[in-house]
Amino acid sequence: MSQQLISLAAVMMLRNIDLTGYVTEIRIAYGVSQAICLIIWILVFLKVSKLPEGGKKIKIPALIQFGKEVKPSKESSVQEHDMDCWKEEMQKIGLGLIIVSGIHMYWEALVPLVLQSIMIPVGVFGNNLFKCHVLNMNVERPFPSTQPFTTSGDAAEAEKTEKPKSVKKKD
Image 1 (cartoon, rainbow, N blue to C red):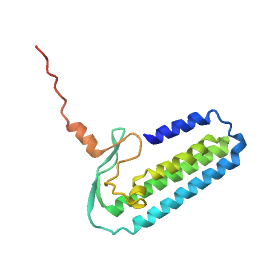
Image 2 (image 1 turned 90 degrees about the vertical axis):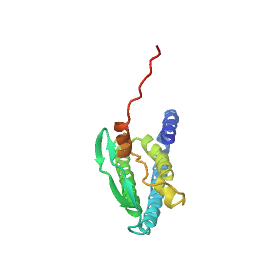
Image 3 (image 1 turned 120 degrees about the vertical axis):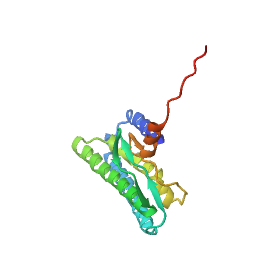
Image 4 (image 1 turned 90 degrees about the horizontal axis):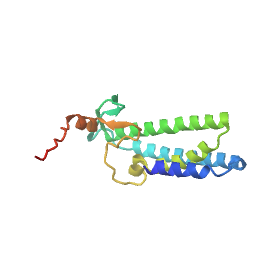
């Protein structure tokens, strides 16, 4: 929720600012923010890879998007779960880097560079893997999905089995 508010506030502020005089500075800020986030994710990867293999298994519920099962439920170790989450985050960052760079190169748009310079670090610092492995916070696993329009299999199953509440009529 806070990420959406930050991005909305940034877009509203950027509407009134002429960014054309700051192309080089914006590109540098974007590159630096991406490099810092990449370094942080490398550190997280090193910490996740040092976790003991095997061990306690955690049950990961199915991931449901638009009513269809995208990922089936499974059981995995803490290391496997964290490594899967790390790979997912790296895919998001890589895809975002390609798309935003392409938009900037093709249309010379500066607003996406500014937004990503702000939003990528905010997303990294709010991520459960970062909290767990860099800040050493105790975060419960499995981590909730950060993908839009998704629910976990447990939540969807609970909705199906929940009985509708009956309404009492007054006589």
